[in-house]
Image 1 (spheres, one colour):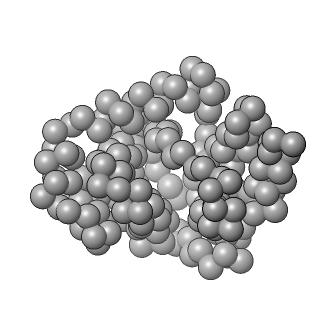
Image 2 (cartoon, one colour):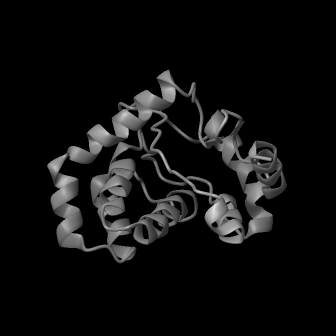
Image 3 (spheres, helix red, strand yellow):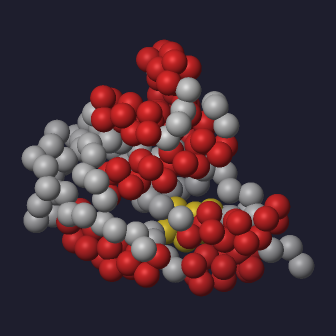
Length: 183
């Protein structure tokens, strides 16, 4: 959200290239929320994002997502329909997970979120069910691990390799972008 706001301000001077990065490329049935580092992280993020009007709702279901591949695959499929639609879905997936408590590991719930974004559902379902997006997500993941040393989300990497890991303020993003700008 902060980077998108900065991109709107900077226009063509800032190009964002979104890459998929599953924290767990395979399901982890032991993943839980209550009383874990995940719950503590959500509390920290909630406090940091409050000024931006972003609401984090503590996970209240028993079925905490064991991975994010179904949501990441959906985003890749929707990106085939255009950048604006991808951006809309990207924000909806975050809002669905962090605010509405939707399980983005469950394809049925992901499909519901995609339908809310205005995507061509016939096209989306054909792409999603083909399984080709999984390969694209895993390619992004391998590239991030092997070439970028990425281990956490969000990780923002600018030309030249400077990176910011974790949720940071808009001021911090601007500082990084100014330092990386050609003189």
